[in-house]
Image (cartoon, rainbow, N blue to C red; front, top):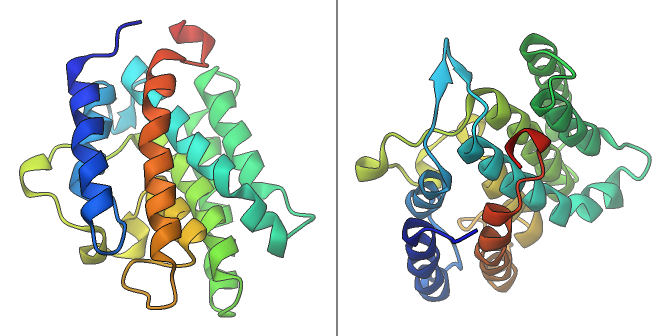
Length: 211
């Protein structure tokens, strides 16, 4: 499949932005440009409509969580809940479960993560959990992509509004760009990897409904 110019342009815009950003960040407005290039958002009664664009966004988000799963298991070696979140996403896309059940499962896991966060340890690992829960939110409601001209930055949002890729970057870098203990090289490495995944994800829809 030929990759559209909009997708290629979003990648080429992101590359120098990551390289030149003093904290190695891929800012939210540029991430949104990538999401839009994947295909239009389609909604019905506040539920995301399954489309090629949605599935591409989901597969890219899943790849991000999978990349940081070892960080989760370093703190919670016997807990596979993030992987169960991803499995639930695949089941939902294949009509093997319903919207309400998936939403409830995600909310229960998010509540557990919030409780663990209060203990003020294993932050990096917990970011992986939040990333996996955000993938569920995306499959149910898609991403917010209608404010490209005036998109806020991640630091202007509360943590409940961050997306799965951003949470994964927090886990990989050991914190946000405004956290002095986080790693700028690892953050830049994560986002460079992220944009390198886009062409393959665009061309390889894993959901059988869109092959």
